[in-house]
Length: 279
Ligand SMILES: CC(C)(COP(=O)(O)OP(=O)(O)OC[C@H]1O[C@@H](n2cnc3c(N)ncnc32)[C@H](O)[C@@H]1OP(=O)(O)O)[C@@H](O)C(=O)NCCC(=O)NCCS
Image: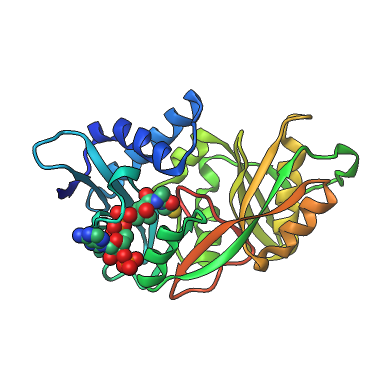
């Protein structure tokens, strides 16, 4: 077994491998989106993307994809093929990815509630923050009138960067073009505060604001824009995000335990909804 840098032609195999390891079936659209996001990270952070392949074989048995955004290190995906787990491959991959983050003080990733993964993250010094998720269809009779929120354009990305720097200490500068392609950017820029949110066909994330009132406006507006009757999923909410829990419950969404937000040398940013792929 050897650990080597991931190449663009590994992405499809990594998609299948992660679906197997996470025990999920991605739809064709979801699989294609996943591949685009990973190809994007290979492009922006070739030194952060690693695979394990069996000697003499071309197929990969493990993958770890990470990125650096300013001084924040983020892990986008991490998995070892189920029949190869427990042999040290996951540790070697995570070491390579974390090595790429050397010099970054802080780290962030969203983790599934998988014992082996949580064990690896805790041993790497991450604090594990349990998260909640809001799911269901919005009860449209609850929607308040929201003003001050509009659809954003590339001209708003300096504002997005400022909010990101203040709230999570690192921008999504390299990711905003892709995020805008995959979803709708909403922005709110008032005298009292600013913020932004990305609404996609599967959820609302990332969302950041300089205060909770602005964050709530953005979340309400995002929920109002979901096609009536279509299910929405707002994930990765630590208990710090009660402003979001309150909006979701008021909108008739269901609250459940989700997974974990793993952070190193930082508290959960707030008000903030992290995305799985880009933190
Ligand atoms: C999380 C995951 C990537 C870890 O990969 P892995 O290859 O099983 O991890 P490792 O083998 O390195 O570590 C497992 C244990 O085997 C031990 N081990 C290391 N070398 C070994 C060897 N040569 N022989 C046997 N065991 C070994 C490790 O020390 C570790 O034990 P520890 O926890 O006491 O340190 C993998 O379990 C996985 O894909 N899980 C499902 C997907 C998932 O949830 N991913 C995370 C999403 S956020």
